[in-house]
Image 1 (cartoon, one colour):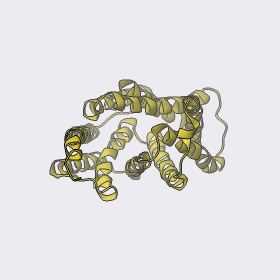
Image 2 (tube, rainbow, N blue to C red; image 1 turned 90 degrees about the vertical axis):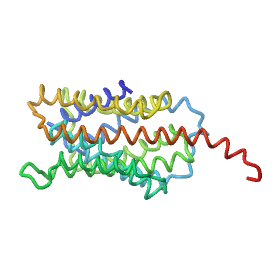
Image 3 (cartoon, helix red, strand yellow; image 1 turned 90 degrees about the horizontal axis):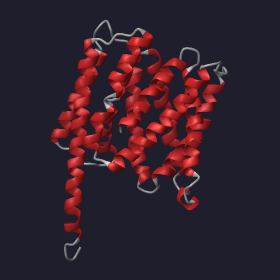
Image 4 (cartoon, one colour; image 1 turned 45 degrees about the vertical axis):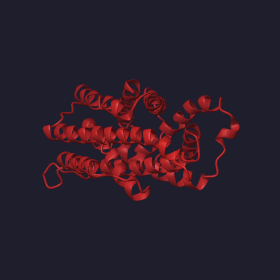
Length: 289
């Protein structure tokens, strides 16, 4: 999880550097293209039968929403202070909890709803909608988090039928051509070291996803989630050293509230999963059922 977090942090820094000369839509295309190049060697070792799917329409919808989320998130990284953009991206699990109750019918009880409410308080502290510091750019970052939550729910639905590697492969196969269409209208070939930034965004972004998946297989979400928060001070430090950005106290306070809410939501989900795993065999053994 630590390696995954560092990969995502490097990806954000690479996107910020590339955004100095390239448009957001073009950066998204290169991130997806080089991400696909990274994924293909891993997928080619799989049994071809495991890569078949009957959910292509769902993949298309999931990938269109994912591209919009990516474009909003990349724009925020390129135009907002890095720490603020990353802090608002951490609000996505709060929206996932809400959407899981609405779209998947999952039971969310009082303590998790309290954590969701706390997460919203953290978002308001960062955005400060009624202050002079409020900008529309923060709403774009927040929209990226909401759309990312929708994508997370869609992945849960796809995972009921397809394997994880199948989902990853079809995601990139759709992402590349979909992201190419808007990129063509703003096309400009990367020059010099900018190639390093766009290739790095693809490699580290995909590497972060793979490492994150393996981390969740090896350990509990509640124990691993706090490690991912290391990304925030990392990008804040880089923003200060490289881009002369300062982080105001409201961003730190709001981020702390959001991260605490996320940690509690992850903890409760882990507790409920363990409880379900303990009781399921007993319920399955009940006579007459």
